[in-house]
Image: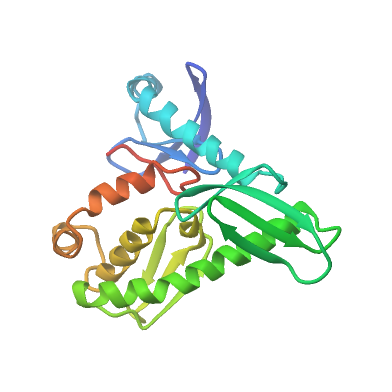
Length: 240
């Protein structure tokens, strides 16, 4: 594999030459790096033309990743806005002795934290609260959708993932959900859970997978699109 950088307009583009048949343009987290997988033998000018033809798409998704990075770099102080189940909530942080406590009242996210808590520690407390929110929500979502999909998860877990909303192990039946989904509208959690349940039956994303998704959740494409447009969405963005 061979790599080098070029400049197209005002964008730095990383070229990665591989043993592939077709050129592929991607925008990657965390800050919207533009990377082009190029078949060996392709002329650089052809690559430049391909990138120029995708500039509006590249700008759109690069800016989204940069907004997401800014969201993740917040200082965790009162007055900031954070998302909870798709709602934009204002953060209030107060120091008090004892254990950390997080409560949600309307669109206000109140945090009581031990005196001297650093921003990283406050973020840790909030992440723990997000995890609890997700833990409380997932069992009900599984109960609702497993009979519809016709598949049952043997186990499930939560972790933060940079490029996936969910994953599954078809052999063990275990599914994993991205912690970030606690920030998204509840319909997104439903969609990801259904997606992973269907993967227990169909490993790829071919016609049979899509047919099962259509039967279980007819509006899954619209839900996925709304999720992909949301703030702080992880994942690899590639042209449709």
